Image (tube, rainbow, N blue to C red; front, side, top):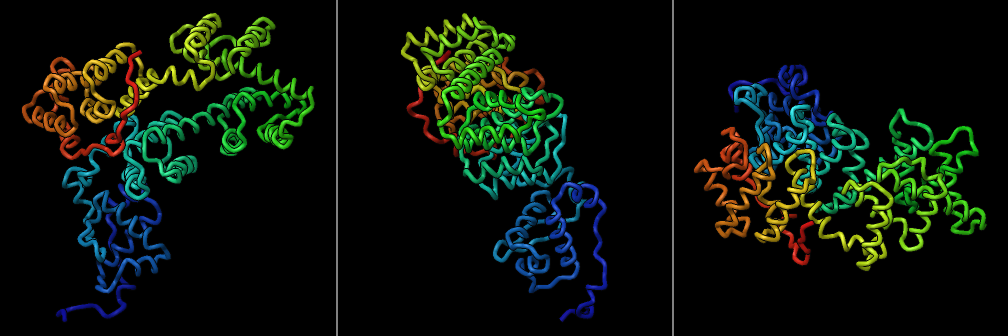
Length: 498
């Protein structure tokens, strides 16, 4: 028995000191339930009860046990709680001032590379709070999304919502929830969902402009309607835009009115009259032509000219509208923005046996693979992507001449993150590996560590600032393990240069 002690139950009449550092630095960005758990645990730390369990805390706060454990994971990550036992769970509180004395946030070394990559996505324009970092880490640890998928998701949100998007807003939760429900495990699976989300946003914006509304973004309800038309009802964006012609019958066109039109068309299931079908076909043809002109950056009003419409119909006799649009996008990428160039591309594809969109995609797959590799590299580096001719030449050399797989290139790519010119820097890294006959990630990592300790960098490939040589941020390679998605076998994929 202790020499001194308080009367049983007296803790209810006492006070629990809460650091002002906690209130200023941690409370504003923490979830409400996380704060409740922290304060309750802090009180129990001052007035211990050896019989207290996580279940007791959950019961006292009206929460689920897993939510209580999740709250402690948050505070453990930001450095205010230290786990001293797993079975049963036990925690020790650390004073917030300890973080200040140690010169920064206490972060598990396993997460250092991921957290640094999160920060790099925002540059100097936004500093992430501990609660936002914790949310991103929960997507990985609790919901089992790969780190590279979360980073791609963050880049998508920045591209579509801007760098000040909310980690906890409804649209953020819905999109990340869709990825969690789909059990996304690879970059390609994530890209499909994110591209569909972008198609919904772009399509809804275009539809607003068609309705004469250009001063605002689509509302959440409008986005949901467009997503339903595209995903659940199976309409194309061209068919949705074509339905806008029906809105001339009302003085107040809206997404709701278009929803009524599309629902009626769906219920008719192709039983429309001949006149209605002809009208719809004309609307769809004009919408497809308009889409092509927009892709090429040409005057969309020319779609009403009989000659242009006749040309488009002649193309439709040989190709479907998806193939024509693919040719338009190809010409736009090559900066050959004329209908004559589109026709030349279509004729070239036709000569090579590509009649359908699937045929064209197969024909272009090697180039698309190169584009995907380059885009993934720029996403990993947290930079605005570019697809310059010299970058294609470099990837062709790495894959065709030196024989490196896409997996190997992506595995060593993070070593070039801090370089001013990451592509030439990565070229230097791969040249060194090629010259030494290194073909596996494990051997490459050992060589990288050796050069880091020797203070060596690829000659002429990075900027001269010595702070950004191999010895910077060494934890990225000291603790980094090759991601699972990079270990997947890509055998069977063709690697061709443009």
